[in-house]
Image 1 (tube, rainbow, N blue to C red):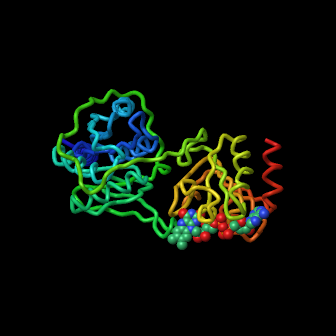
Image 2 (cartoon, rainbow, N blue to C red; image 1 turned 135 degrees about the vertical axis):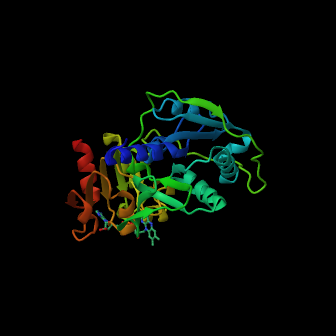
Image 3 (cartoon, helix red, strand yellow; image 1 turned 45 degrees about the vertical axis):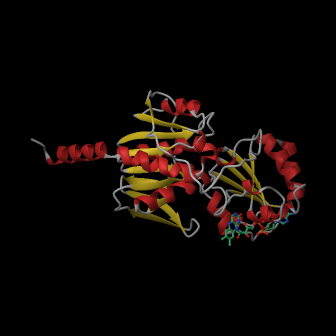
Length: 330
Ligand SMILES: Cc1cc2nc3c(=O)[nH]c(=O)nc-3n(C[C@H](O)[C@H](O)[C@H](O)COP(=O)(O)OP(=O)(O)OC[C@H]3O[C@@H](n4cnc5c(N)ncnc54)[C@H](O)[C@@H]3O)c2cc1C
C-alpha cells in the first residue's frame, strides 16, 4: 500500500522514467563545444533517460568525449561526408529519423547559430512549437525564457507531445565530462543528402583568446572607441586579464571589429564573471546579451549613460586615459 506521499513520489519517479531526451551535440569533429555540456545540464534538469546525437564527418573524438559524461545512457553517432559543414538541411532529416526510431519526449540543442538553424526545422516537421532559448526548467513541461529583449521573464507550459527546445548555454552550468560510460551506437542510417544546399568552405577565425560565450572575463568596446585601431587598447587590457574581447553592435556596424564579436540581442549572449564595458552606452539590446554577468564594470565619459544602471562599478572617465592607466596597473 502507498501512503499519499509515497504514491506521489512513485508516480513522479515513473513519469521521469517515461521521459527521454535527445541532446544534439555541437562539436567540430575533434572535440565538443562547451555549450553541449550546458545543454546536457538542462536535459538532466528535465529528468529521464538521456541520449546524445553526435553527427559529423569524423566525429569519433567528440563522441568519445561526451560518452564520459555521467547520466547519459547512449551516444548515437552518425558519420558521413553529407554532414560536412553541419548544415540544417542534412541534420534535420537525421534527427527526424532518430526521433522516429526512439520516440523521445524532448529534443534539445544549444541556442547557438547551430541549434537555432536546425531545431525550428525539426519542430516544423514534427508539427510542434519550438521552445527557444530557455534559461530555466521548472519541470518536464514547463520552461523559463526571456521576452522583450530580456526585459521580462516568461514561464511557459508546453502541451505538445514532443518538446523541441534550444538552451541558452549561460543559464545552465556545464556538465562535467567524467564519471560516465555511455554506450556508443550508430544512429539510424538513411539518405541524408540534399540538393537544397551545398557546403563549399568556411573560414574560421583563429584566436588564442578565450571563446566569447565561455570566457570568464570579457572586455567589450563600443562606438566610444572611435576606430578599429583603438581596440588595441582593449586587447592590451584583455591580455592582462586573460579575457575575451567583445563589442557593441555600433562598433561592429562601424567596421571597428568583425561581427562575431557582437554581444547583445542580435549577437552573442554572455555571462562571464567580469564584464568591462568601455565606451558603450548600455542600450537595452546590448544589455540583453550581458546583463547576467556576475560583475559589470562600466567606463564611460557620460555620467548619464544607461550602462551605469546595471554596472556594479562605474568609472566616469575618458576611456583613452582610463583604459591604459588600468592596464598599466594590472
Ligand atoms: C533590433 C535591434 C537589435 C539590436 N541588437 C544589438 C545587439 O545585439 N548588440 C548591441 O550592442 N546593440 C544592438 N542594437 C543597437 C543598440 O540599440 C545600440 O544602438 C548600440 O548598442 C549602441 O552601441 P554603443 O553603446 O557602442 O554606441 P553608443 O550608443 O553611441 O554609445 C557610445 C558610448 O560611448 C561613450 N563614449 C564616447 N567617447 C568616449 C570616451 N572618449 N570615453 C568614454 N566613453 C566615451 C558615450 O558617452 C556613449 O555612451 C540593436 C538595435 C536594434 C534596433
